[in-house]
Image 1: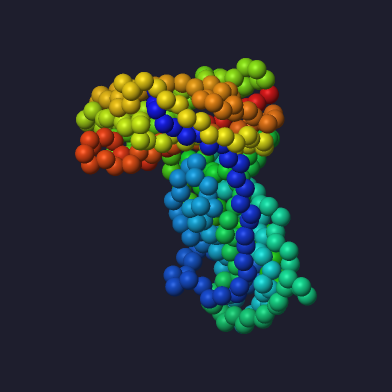
Image 2: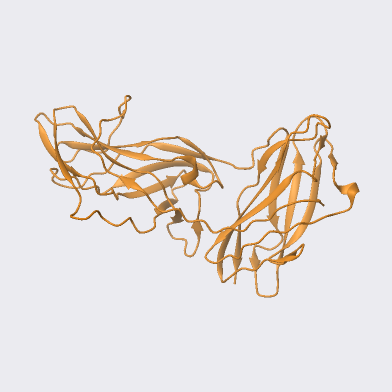
Length: 318
């Protein structure tokens, strides 16, 4: 048990932001492109290659830049506007499952319409045509009703499809660069955190039990400072209530010691009453749960310190 812990239920949706500038390509030009169409090829350049599951992807600065290359033998005149670039994007994992990003409505267009500029490309020259910079989440092909704030752990190929460029006859498909989403439950300073559900389905009046498990993966015993540590549960879904709860156990439970290879486990109802707050799900559908524990450093007592996360957990309300 623990003395002071915080449960926060949040529904977060970040608008999609895209830009189109016609700016020069980065110092290191793309090494691959998609198939050429009308003498022009498209390349997709991720700003990062590795991410952590469970953290909102917009908070990890994913930007997918779009660049075109004149692969023909003559000069090309390309016209770009400052309107947002909205390519069709898909993320395909190693098993062939395809995820599509979701977006909120784009911002209002500028009065008078977008500005347009002409660019002349010599043979072999690159031109940046824009970027997609944030996503509000993902859906998986063939899976109804489930929305992912972040891609599940795995390796993905990313592709932009059916991109139209003024001055090119036909639509362009990009190459398929790789990104990796790493598991969130990587041990930190010898401590791993897990979140499990006794039943993955909840019904009105029949909550499930969530099991919170701390595991010692190191070579020495670990002391947890539960009085100063913060345990936070984040819940996202179609309709979620928001609240915080404090729980104060007996003092003997404040500094448990987890032996090497051992575990510390306790449960709480979900949805239900925790402390003096009632947590309720607002409707049917899928709910996404993520647990984190953060404990500040204490030089005098030297307990475990750091921040550790569980893997995301899905629960269905029927």
